[in-house]
Length: 282
Image (cartoon, rainbow, N blue to C red; front, side, top):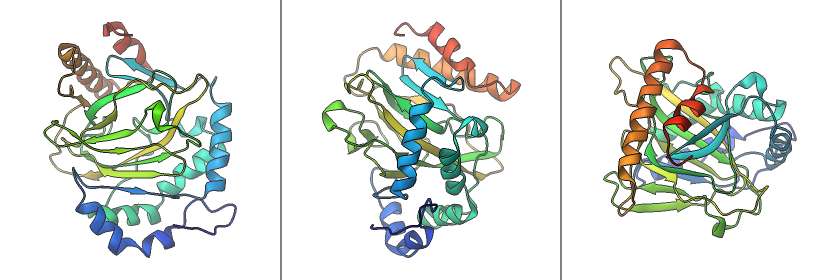
């Protein structure tokens, strides 16, 4: 979709709303689970500013290092530590107007934003980075009746080469095969349901050059439920993948950490030391 936007406009919600009838049908009928890939999603000039701000953050103190058997990436999810344009972009994607668009697109009413940016915010992976196939945690650790429903990922990677890897893989619900791969290219947005069996990830260590990064803005949305289904992030071994025992052991540690965080309100930065200690890979 071609956009002509003012320099300060992050997203042309009206333009996307004009296509909702077609987009919502495409989303809700997609396989292997409801999802959609949208090109030229945000104002490219705004995303250029976000990239420049990413470049200033490499040595910032707020990064969370997710390094364990099933994952190798960094995240920063504190709004007050994010630069102005990235923060403004996130706020626009948490606005009432965008939430209304998401609800119509997905068919899920009354979606809630997450000001904690739990597990989200901005993500960055370099050479060797990966994220094993998984289904996401299902309940917000600090809101026990918030069921996680939708992921929105916006990629910021110019000149990304497919040979480097990093493609988002969408697997069927029985984890027998990858049904779709999505390259993480600049201004591409992927939106998908986060059900208990919405398996996804980019499981092969990336081979991008040193100093090249796979970057994204990641936001998650919730609905308020009386009795939500509760489970931590659940990794799955792919058919033929070795070290299945380590995948299961790592799942147990992630589940324990998630429970402790919910009880004590722990900060995500402790995850690095806990999971790294119990991982034989890192």
